Length: 127
Ligand SMILES: [Zn+2]
Image (cartoon, rainbow, N blue to C red; front, side, top):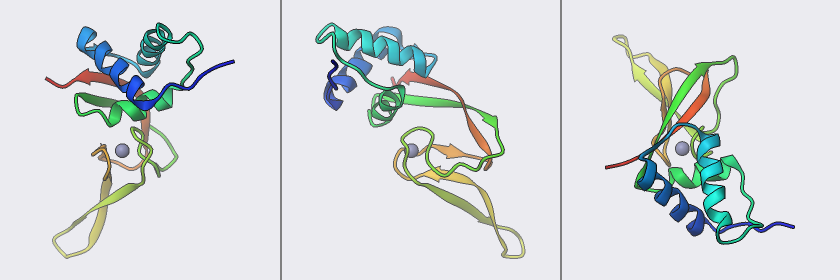
């Protein structure tokens, strides 16, 4: 038996945790701190790491820093919020367009090169 906490409850737990610690250095750690806090209200609460990160990405008081590593696979969805990525292009001296990276229109996450994937997420409180 389990229960799914609402976005507002999760958001307020994330905010409280970051107010206390200022910085949480992994998604796994943030998830366990949030879950622990939510379980004070309801011991049957469950949630995934992805959901914690996506909700954190929508909170104005939270900044997410993504440490990346190389991969062979091309990024299609935003690593922070899961939205579509837009290809960033620049024109060279001859007017030819070249892709220089990707950007998420929803949360602003940017990738300078194509084939990178997240190694670690760091959650910071915006001051
Ligand atoms: Zn995004």
